[in-house]
Length: 98
Ligand SMILES: Nc1ncnc2c1ncn2[C@@H]1O[C@H](COP(=O)(O)OP(=O)(O)O)[C@@H](O)[C@H]1O
Ligand SMILES: [Mg+2]
Image 1 (spheres, rainbow, N blue to C red):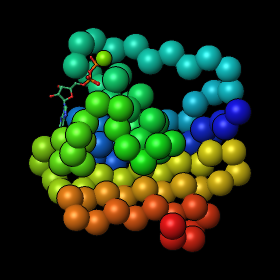
Image 2 (spheres, rainbow, N blue to C red; image 1 turned 120 degrees about the vertical axis):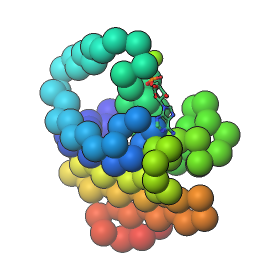
Image 3 (cartoon, protein in one colour; image 1 turned 90 degrees about the vertical axis):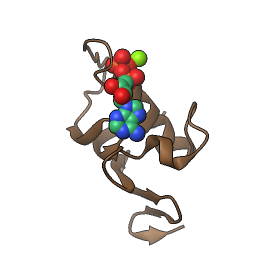
Image 4 (cartoon, rainbow, N blue to C red; image 1 turned 180 degrees about the vertical axis):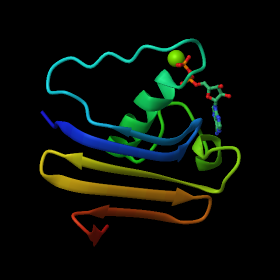
């Protein structure tokens, strides 16, 4: 099982700048309606699958006020970086582009 040690979310839907360090056991995300709970789960899914489980286009997941999003994570001992705009996509694992 992969463990997310650190997660930085930048301009993904309404999550303009979020940094989380999940704990090893159960993590509980509590918030009112439309605060971004599902968006957080979608960002984590995006990291693992390089796609959304609901958006058909990249544009939908990029924050309305900008033109790209970025996810940075430390998963197990690996550093994953995913940057996306409408016309460019960069994925790097431990500083190597893929
Ligand atoms: N591309 C986007 N840019 C900015 N905000 C967005 C974007 N897509 C969705 N949102 C906002 O995200 C909010 C919904 O977040 P969501 O994670 O579904 O909430 P919940 O906490 O209820 O699960 C809404 O306020 C919606 O306007
Ligand atoms: Mg929700």
